[in-house]
Structure formats: structure tokens, C-alpha cells
Amino acid sequence: MTSLIGKKAPAFKAKAVVMGDQIVNDFTLEQYIGKKYVLFFFYPKDFTFVCPTELHAFQHAAGEFEKRNVALVACSTDTEESHWGWLQMTKEQGGIKGVKYPIVADTTKIISINYGVLAGEYKLNHGGEPEADGPMIAFRGLFLIDKKGVVRHSLINDFPLGRNVEEALRMVDALQYFEEVGEVCPANWKKGEKALEGSHSGVAKYLASTK
Image (tube, rainbow, N blue to C red; front, side):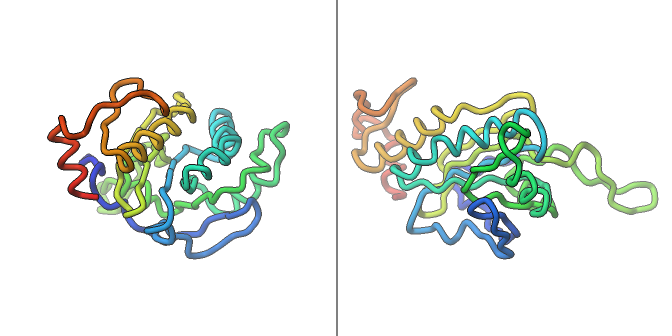
């Protein structure tokens, strides 16, 4: 797959559950362009074991993302009805009640394909008909999208590997620090630490020119 880094995030319109209990028919990331950064993340399936730990963790940190003007948006290949049902179940029941950020229903799997996170592919069988080869669900993909709608960071984990929400926040801080100050962030950089002067980096100059 070709990396999406530095490119416009693939656009889509799809059904989604917002605010934990409202189904909308035409959810799109384009509503955030010019207004907010977006952390768009995929997870494999509703009603599983690792997935709720991630969704709860992102909700727990929602205030920190909001302070940074970042919209959280989740997505899986389940239906909007499945999302809604899972959202009505408490954490003790294995559900994700209390999650308020949007959860997109990628029932066609086109969104997962366009973002390069679909596990499996469609192949033609001997009869010339499309046939699924693989589980056809999303890996744990994560994409940090800037206010221009450009992908600036991505991460894709296999099914058993849960993500680190603190690392996602660190990447937001690094991107915003570079945009505001023009200094690039070295390995293990954290907000408040010294960075490197952008004027010493050809890469930084190029990136600054694209802002």
C-alpha cells in the first residue's frame, strides 16, 4: 500500500453513531477541515475484548484531545445498529457506554480499503464472482489529520496489539509544536522539552512551506 502521509485524508460519507445514542446518515470528516485536527482510528469489531479497552481509553483522554482542538473519531466495519447496541452496554457488561465521540459504520469496507487497514481482500472465484479472502475487518489503524485535511501521522497495529493513547497525544503535541514554533521534535520528545531548530533541517523547511 502507498502511504497516506502528506496526502489528503480519503473522503467519505457514512452512517455513524454520535454522542453515544444518535445515528446519523451522512457523517463525514470534511466537517472538521479548517476547524479541528482529527484523530481517526479504526478497530476490528464491536463486542470484543481488546477493542473496548481502547475506546474507553480514548474517551478517558477526550478532555486532553479537546484542549488540543482534536476531534476523536472511531470506525469499524460493523453496522451502525451494532455500534448503537454496544454503546448501550456498560463497561462491566463488556460494552462502551459513556463513549461520546463518533463511531463510523464502514459496512461497505470502502473506508478501510481507502485507508489501507482492511485485513483481507476481494478476489474473483472460478465463477467470476467476488469472494472475500480474509476476515475483512479493520486492523488497528490510527491517522492524525491536520486542519487542512492532510494526514501527518499514521500507525497500523495487528489485531492483538492495543494502542497507546499517551503516544497519540504526544504526536498531536509534536505536530502542533512544529506548526507553531517551527522546531522539529527528536526521538522521545515530550511537550515542554527542548526541540531542534527547524532552520537546521531541510525537511522542516519543506514541511513549513506546505503549511
